[in-house]
Amino acid sequence: MPKQKAGCQTIGCRVASCAYNKSGCSCDLDQIEVQPRNGCHTGEPCDESLCGSYKSR
Picture 1 (cartoon, helix red, strand yellow):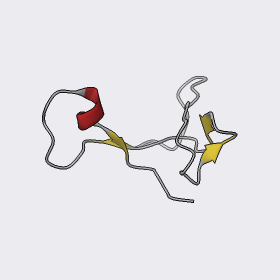
Picture 2: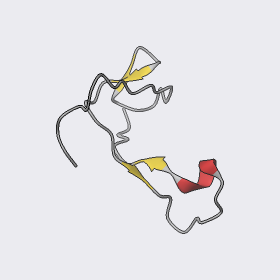
Picture 3: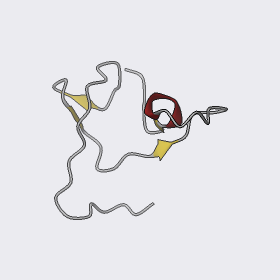
Picture 4: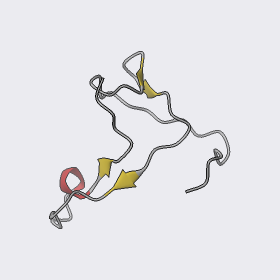
């Protein structure tokens, strides 16, 4: 994955338990890794993807 931002992207995030959460509404990382959930192939958004960059506080 490239280490540069493409354009002026921002990453919104409300996961307060993540170490990278900034002020409760955004991600402090320059990029995140999105990956599928293990063993889930339902097609439902809540089952199909997770933030692989998550790090607990």
